Every structure is written in C-alpha cells, then in structure tokens.
Image 1: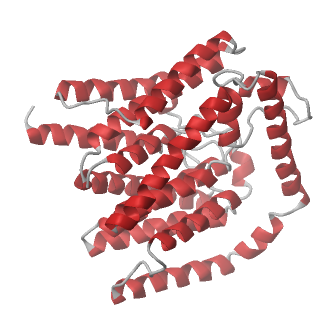
Image 2: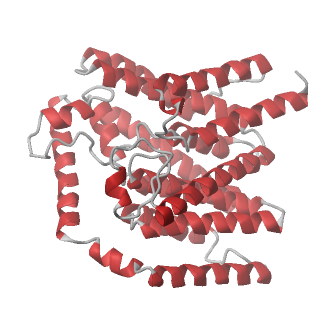
Amino acid sequence: MQKMTVKSMKRLIGSILIIYTAMQSTPFYSSNLFVYVGLYILSIVLLLLCGDIIAKNSYFTAFSVFWLIYGLVSIVWAVDMYLWFRNSAILLLMTLSIIIFTNILDSKENLIYFSKVWAITIGIASLVGWYEVVFNNYHFTISDNIAKYADKNWPLFSFLNVNDFSTYLTISLPIVLLWIKNEDRKSSRRLGYVIFLSSLLLIIYVISRANLLAIAVGIAVLLMLKKAKFIIKNKYELAFIFILVLIVLVITFSIGIVDKFIESFTYEEMRSDLLRVNLIKNGLRYLKDSNYLGIGAGNLEYYLPNFQYINTYGMKYIHNWWAEVLVNFGVAVFIFYVIFWSKILLLNIRLSFSKCNNINRYISMAVVVFFIAVISPSSILLMKWLPVFTGFMVAASTMKL
C-alpha cells in the first residue's frame, strides 16, 4: 500500500475504536461481545495487510501478555466458566489495543488527530446527555433503570447507569484538553472548551463525587507540572475562559447544584458508602481463601452474591476497579498492574519537566484522573473505553515526539 493509504488506514482504525468506546449498551449490535472482539481482530488483520505492525517489546506489552496468560490459566480454579471466558476476552482486547495503538499512534500529528476524534465523540455524548436531561427521553441505552434515572432527569447516553456515563466523561476530559492545547485553529480550540464545559457540567449536575474528586486532583497535578503558571497566556483566550467559568458558576447555583451536593450526603448515601466497604471486605476474604492467587478471571461477580461473609444484599459488583483486579487475579498481578500505571505516570511526569511539552502533562493528568475515577462505577471491566484508553495512554507515553 502507498504511504498515504497506510496513514489513512491507521486513522480509520483508531477513529472507529475511539468512537466505539461511546457505544456502551445500545439497542444495536455494538453491545455484542463477539462484535466487540471481532472489531479488534479485524483491526489487527488490517494492520497486518498494511504490512506496518510491530509488537513493541516493553514492560507494558509484556505485562498485558502475562496478565492474559494468568487469566487463561485461572480456569483451573475459576468457578463460573462464562465469567472466566468473558473476562479473558477483555484481557485479550487490552493486549490487542496496546499493540494496535502503539502502531497507529506513531506521531504527534496522529496523537492530535485521535485526541480530536475522542473530543468530538464525547462532545456528541454530552449533547445527547443534555437532551436527556431537558426532554427526559432515552433512545441510546438498553438500561433496565431508565425510569429510575428519568425521575431525576439524569443522563445515561448509551450507558446502563449514570456513574458509568460520568466516569466515561471524566477520563475523557484530559484528552479533550490535550487536543485543545495542541490545536492550531482558534475556532477548534473554542469548540474544545465548549465540549469540556458541557461534559464537566454534566458531571457536576449528577454530583458524581469520585469523578469530581478525580478531576480536581488531575487539575492540581496539571498545575504542578506547569509550575503553577496559568494555563492560558493569550489575553483573548483568557477572557473566553473567564466567561465560560462565569457561566458554570451561574448555572451551578441557578439549578441548585450546591443543595444537591449537600443532599448527596444523606443517610441513604452513607449506607451506600458502607455497603461499598463491606463489598471490599468480602472480596478480601475471598482473596485470603484463594491463598492470594485470586479467585479466577471475572469470578468476583459470582462470589459476591453467593458467598457473603458480610451481608451485601446480593450485589455482584465490588464498586472498585482496583479491588476487582486484586481479588480476581491475586496480589502478584495487582502489584504488576499498579506498576504498569505508575510507570506511565512517572514517565510522563519526567518528560513534562525535561521537554516542557503539553502532551506529557495532559497524559499525566489523564492517568491521575483514571486512578481515582475508576472507584466510582460498579465495574469498568466491560466498559468499551477501558482497552482503548489503556492502549492510548501507553502509545502516547512511549511514542517519540
């Protein structure tokens, strides 16, 4: 294939995978596991046909392969075979995603392009979210709890619950900022700020506390990496941002966000927090019973409702991604997984100071946001953004600028 054709193919593959992250639980076939896996296999095949694919030797690739093999081997002690199969399929996608994105995200130009695609994707998602808030109509999700969320005018887009949607928006915000800060056209930058503001307002509107904390800490890290200098230096852009912030404050107080935040600490919410603690306590007991090897890929979803040391009312998700990895796969995999993300973070922090570029600063912010945001949903295992986000972060961190 000609060079331009290969470049176009890479951009097409990356764009499809990024757009697909937003199609979580729709009435269409995009929610089918075989379609999900098939899309990644097709991407690998297309790259092979382009003759431009290399499985780069790095800790990130090595760990993803090790994790996949460990997950497959855990069939020996796993109880539920379907959950084992489903989780193993996701581990395969994580490995394939790292291989795919380290091959297609091979230049600053492509990084900015894919960041733009991601930003526009969540821009459309947030627009649909606001449509659901205003008109109380839900057309893109197969959630069984539509009536529950419609009663509160909460957005879902294509997700099953509001926390999942909020987390998707949250982990996407640093990528939107990455695009904004590396985009040459003022009109595109302003569109990016509107997308950022729209998504942030939705997260504030639903009072997703873990996600708001993730964003706040992420911004603090970003400011630290910029040595406390304000992000925008151009006076016209500064005026534009000031107006957007003013709009946020006006809307926040006019729709009673402060009251909603105070009300979120009600007895019911505190009961919910206690339930999360008890879910983790049960998980740690399962981990101990497994001699710290883990209970098998995906099997926590089977153990929680069926073996309760502490009553958790039949809930099957542990509501904490880090605890989910620990209990399913054991201490060794958990430690290597923490090292995986820590290496990405430390690599980007070091490059942020040595090269003083916007890319590594925003990747650092994205990793910090991810660390915290993933404790918000019931589980991110089946989130279609997880493999893509992982591959995107690895590729953006290891590519040569």
